[in-house]
Length: 210
Image (tube, rainbow, N blue to C red; front, side, top):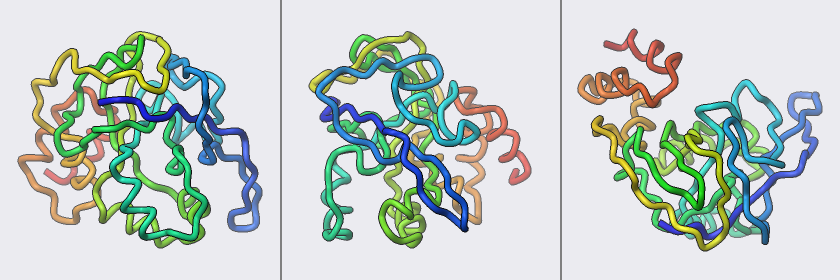
């Protein structure tokens, strides 16, 4: 896998239900490296720390291969890397193959795959319609957050190389579908609950579906 673009978001005010809120989803490509820190990307904007940033959502990666699909669906938008709010646009990122818990060398940083992105209303505001939330869920290629095991820098052109594959075979895409499926596949559910690379609160919530 290779980094196509490094992206940062400046604080942007948007109106939602009569309130002004700040978001960092409006990201733009950089010519400089990103510093991946323990709980965030240095210099990035996190509008709501309850749902973005933190140990299990320190940096968001999205696949460059998904861009053509969405460009065709929304041709009227002004397109550039970082469109989905990702810090890193990655060539070759395949959620159907990447296991939750895999460890990668990413530039000089060491990262671990944690959880897929669950879209919220801010993506809908950026794309001009809340319909994209269901479309994004149904499409099934959500990108992934990573945990930073070793702080380091990432530049466009750097590679993302597997260091250690998780013993738990749960893939990012399997977990993503599990979150939204009304009927939970019990074998996948058990893999998720036993995967300690996922946040504990998410695993605890899933236990009620056993």
